[in-house]
Length: 285
Image 1: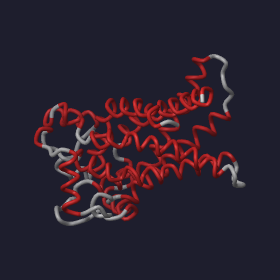
Image 2: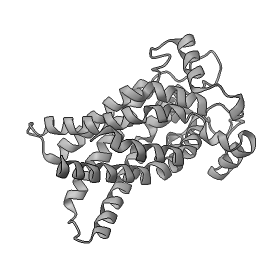
Image 3: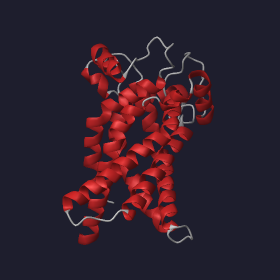
Image 4: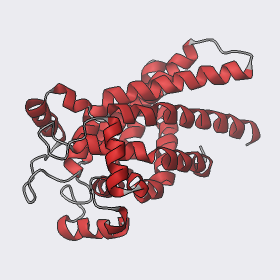
């Protein structure tokens, strides 16, 4: 897939859905009902952010995902195609090969975007007004100066990001293409569009439900630690175990509703763009 073909839909999706990403992060980094800054509900979170940080509070950390959009989409779809071609040469069944190709594309994508995610989460966690917040570039410079480029600095939470994107893409691509091939196509263009959109919506929703514990761990590691200067959340599975032990298993699903609201329809749109543009390129190139 040509990177520029997926760039514009991705940018539109980011601009429209970023408030849900901010809300998701805020829920994931709060530590239970004992947290004095805890949000009581989705509506309470939206109202609090709007009242204390203004409308621009919903767009904190938007620059890193915008900057990462082209390489992210290019890596996601290009590597999926390459892994799929390689795995077709193996004795794996087509269905398993599609899921494995999705896993590979997710792991590769995570390596590219993790530094952008570190900057984004640190900005989203900041509850100061938008005008008082440092810019994305200033925040990146501060992270590098304080902790460097490594796993405690600009690449912290890498294992969680690998898990989040690897699991998501494995289910996302595997479910979509396997189910799409199993359900007969429709000669009616509208019904065919709805068939693909529904399968894409389910793909994004199921993937979000399965991978969210990795997302929560990633937010805890990349966000502010409970006690400044002390690292409580260190590694992916250590963080999951700690959250489960201290807050219960439901805490591993914090932010699920805004995540599904974003990645359910957003995932469907991206797969449809990918399919229709790929078909157009095959016909014309």
